Length: 344
Image 1 (cartoon, rainbow, N blue to C red):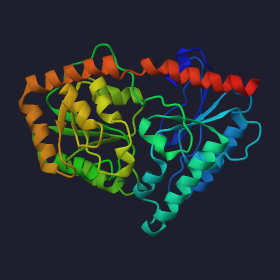
Image 2 (image 1 turned 180 degrees about the vertical axis):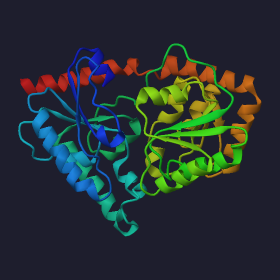
Image 3 (image 1 turned 90 degrees about the vertical axis):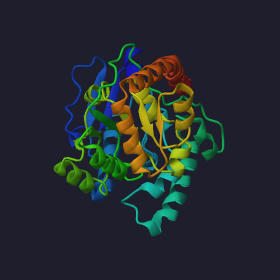
Image 4 (image 1 turned 135 degrees about the horizontal axis):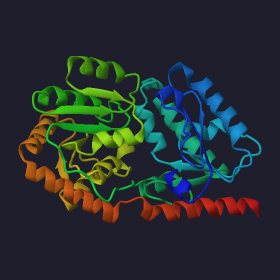
């Protein structure tokens, strides 16, 4: 979105602002916010109907409709008068079905078949933009790839000495239980800050851990506030499980920590081990090994030079190799091409 705004485009952002306690954007030139309910729990279907209505109202007359959520592929089907629709694919849709806490296990095979149908439908009705090369094999025809990298500030604070952080959606598959247990093991020395919304299965665990002082769960925070918490942390946690969806995904979390100048403590979901090893920008621990993760946190706490050098090397690598502006031009060029084709 920032790339589109910086290029002078007008953007209407449809999102569940109210659900996350975020005011509609009013101070950013060219940006208009429209709040819709979040698709969660028993409100999922009604929320998707609300999104469909909002798109019907606000997308007509625009140059491009860009969406990320695979549920919208079918929710927006057969809407008339839309501009070219682009699905920006940020996950392995079928693989994520095994991670949905609201989907009963007996229904997950059906969910995976539905995900494949969504991919086929999208491929025949919409434009696709892939955030990772690993998603190519999910589709029958080639689609452009624009890597899911991040903005990297030119200057960052050195890592601190009293807290580690995680920023992102909190689920069991993303290591929420392990991060809580790390918090319990290191709480006398280091604080564990967890930033992000949680799914229904994980929320009670976080509330309990927060109440007992094992972690500090901040809930969802706007991006700028989440970045403030990340910069100056001692390290960033990324304790994802060994799941199919993560094996084909870019190591976004590790790169985000590198961009903020802090080392990461990460499980070996590819390509995190390669990136961390190449740049010596963190510590890799085995899947589910809470003791190793806690030991890594305490090692970084005890060695200021180690964490400072890891943070510095990671930040330099992020600037050189993973900064979003290097890819923003390709992103905008592709959207502009599709918009122009629709007007011919």
